[in-house]
Image 1: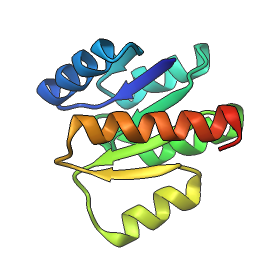
Image 2: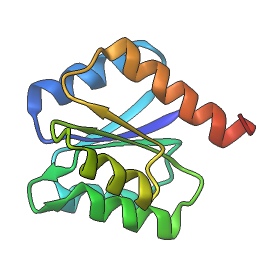
Image 3: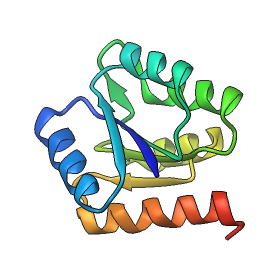
Length: 123
């Protein structure tokens, strides 16, 4: 399964990338809005992990972009913004899940598998 990780915090991005590679996922990662937008325009993914606050833009705008072109892709928001309004807004835009930072990598792995399972196998 191919995952795009969009996270600007270098250490967290490396940690998530390493863990998910060990779990057998193919991971591509970017650190800013423009790089993410380019990847999303050029490639298809099974799941996208996106932070809300990014250099050069907002992760919620990326969700809008994705939902226009790749409606079946799973989207999980990973964010330090833990307000109920941010959660509702992200989910209403089309995200499948919202995981507030800090989080367990094992929990993230389980949520990715659940999103992929729902999207690819009808639940």
